[in-house]
Amino acid sequence: MTQAAAAVAREKPSDEPGDGPVVVTGGAGFIGSELTRQLVEGGRDVVVVDSLVNGRRENLAGVEGPRCTLRTDDVRDEAAMAEALRGAAVVFHLACLGVRHSLHSPRENHDVNATATLTLLKLARAAGVERFVQVSTSEVYGTALRVPMGEDHPTCPLTVYGASKLAGESYARAFLATGGLPTVVVRPFNAYGPRCHHEGDSGEVIPKFLLRAMAGRPLVVFGDGTQTRDFTFVSDTAAGIAAAGFAPGAVGATINLGSGHSVSINALAQQVALMAGRSVEVVHDLPRPGDVHDLRADASRAAALLGYAPSVSMVDGLRRLRQWYEESGVPIERLLEQEVVRNWEGSARVDV
Ligand SMILES: NC(=O)c1ccc[n+]([C@@H]2O[C@H](COP(=O)([O-])OP(=O)(O)OC[C@H]3O[C@@H](n4cnc5c(N)ncnc54)[C@H](O)[C@@H]3O)[C@@H](O)[C@H]2O)c1
View (cartoon, rainbow, N blue to C red):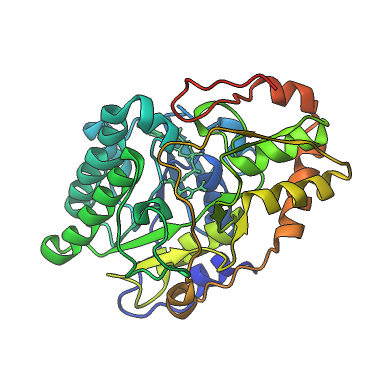
């Protein structure tokens, strides 16, 4: 039984939500689709809300059906959200627009990530939702002043994305303090694994590196590559989020979800090259504006409150992701056609 399934199946103390259906906003996205899988496996009926702006119906292949329905609604649509939340025991709120999007479209980023969260909290309270899990991000911290970063580390986001996610989590805490809605905030650190984004605005470093390495193309590092990140395999991240929906004693907490280990982008490039089984050239481009330098989680609160125990090592996670690409049947060169190699401000396009 997975960690999530165990959390779902655990005996129900008084503050634990009942057996009703759960809503996963952003459930056709990278992390949301893995979370949805784990929840269905744990015996829950799931309503996924996803506009498919960055998510894909294919991400729910094999899970969409009688136990899991997809509503292709926008979380900014208040009437549709009131309907989606009716009868829900738990809401897992993941729908959002990402960090690169926030650089070219800050207002829309705020509208989706902050304003729509406020609306959902209001609707959840009206619908009598028993627990609301606000999925925030480590980006709310800004760059690390010290590592590992506990939840009491100062928050100083460097992007509108981070700021809008901080607003969303602040609203969630406020709705617990003064609105009577049981809320939990989780702050995942960088996740990777099957269904992660290699393309466009949402593209992430690990899938980009891995696909390029598999195709024998150079890896593009923005800046000098000494920046560090705490990467977690997506099944571990999703298990932590699921546990936050059901674990007794989690309401009111703000909880990091990370591996507790960090790796520099230069070291990651070497690991990916090893995994691809070939020597790979690394080229450096300008540093990204607003790119935080260091992130490493102190995940001890997650362990204590949620029983969170990430189990997939970096080597194993990279191997699983490579295997997933190989088994997808899509030629690597075709996937790479969707990749955009550009810096965050969009002006320093590099053709490599
Ligand atoms: N991927 C990571 O490394 C990471 C790290 C920290 C936090 N997070 C958080 O985890 C959550 C999921 O991230 P992800 O990486 O899976 O991203 P994702 O883009 O794959 O998932 C977000 C989903 O939200 C949907 N969405 C966007 N705007 C919407 C709208 N207006 N209405 C309805 N649906 C909408 C998208 O279509 C997408 O499927 C986000 O809240 C993100 O902030 C992710």
